[in-house]
Image (cartoon, rainbow, N blue to C red; front, side, top):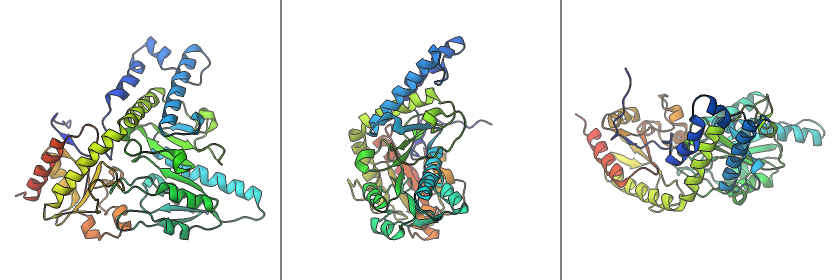
Length: 402
């Protein structure tokens, strides 16, 4: 039996994925014509004939556009991927192995390469780091403080002469903490290591300038900013050691094999440009919704904010609210709210089927029993104040469920 969703359904799980925006749809529409016309519009961007050259031009326009959005020094620092998971895997494994190989060539004797990551990373960073551990790398995970922040002094203490790579996310997807990326990158560079950040949740929500931050690599996903799923990007600063991760035809200047999804990339670039152009206004609007929601939730006795987010704070994402509900499991509340027409989550969508408390909350030192009652409410450009007020009414009804 097909699942149907009411047109009045209020979607408040934007940190998991976002609806397509009109700008992205319009950018992709020309590629969706059927039959013979599609050959001319949607050819392989690596072919030498006229349709291929047209596709290549569209690909490079998107590359230049996205490079401008994050202030990359040059367009060829952008590698388009099949999503942020691929970008993260490429950064962690490809960069770590490349730096290790370079150091082995320049020094006598072998060494045990070391990477440092935070314990609150997405699994797309944690898992490849663990894979490297099985290949002989030493891996150190550093925990955040109770507010969700990775402290620079902790990173400094974790690093050593053999550290080749540091990866700390720009913004946490659960509690919304914005990490001090620029300072963390400086510490990594002072010790001779590269610095990568998973910027999936940050793009389009807060100002993100790769040159200003001084980072070496960053991962992005189109579907977090109202673009299509299955499209991502990896920023790789020019002239740093880089080892390609997907092998084959040598597309993306030999850095990522596989025929490029020109249609999806065009949709990604359009969504990114739209988000960047409206960033200041939309972030301020969403920050007001966040502060309103925290204020309303704090008045409910069973509900407590997971982190202390001061009104107007720019230390946390403007579109994420995270609370702990005493006496309830998040799965129960998510399903009850869904029945009332509101979509929220208990944490990261990638672990939504796990019965274990969030690894993020555990790393922050939150008691496991309390973590079972976690709720994340996240929103975006189509969310209204009426949606927020309606959610509060629905949550109160769920807590008074008979």
